[in-house]
Length: 212
Image 1 (cartoon, rainbow, N blue to C red):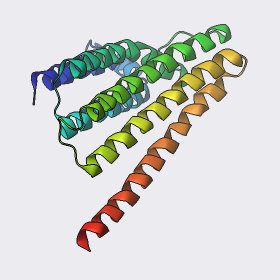
Image 2 (image 1 turned 60 degrees about the vertical axis):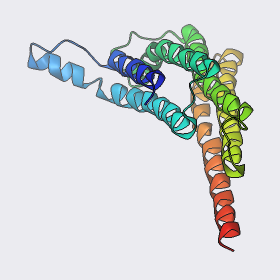
Image 3 (image 1 turned 120 degrees about the horizontal axis):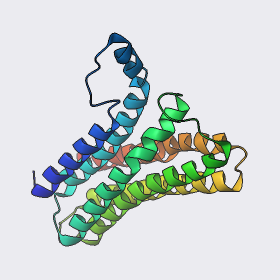
């Protein structure tokens, strides 16, 4: 593990700390029950931050890069994640009606804009990391299969980024129905499923060609 990965893990750990319902130990049982109401919010936000961490983990396992561009992009990703944490927690606090102040209808489009830009920023950073790896494919001595996986990863993250931007734009264009902008995030499953299916199909074809 490089110092860059160690620093990234520390930053992600700090981001998850910011998601904790409360850092203070409850003094009364009623306070404990009140804090437990925030468990669904913590669970969902923890899972989303973990997904981002795992995406970065996979990148470093594949390429183990520490060139200046990778360092800058990694720091930018961490910056976006740390900024993204509070809008993420606030949004799901509103969804689960736990802890957050009531959200005025006029403020919902702006909340989705902030969340969408953070979501898009994370995926843009991941796409640029893979793009940098593909740019250095000869230096990294990537084989044909590894180059294919890198291209698929770039496309996957760019499409996912576009969904975040589309949701943010939809919330601004149709401010009276921000629920539609929220439901749009379920479309993230489409590029993930297509990327997995296409990669699996090529992997099977790749294996058959080597076995024959």
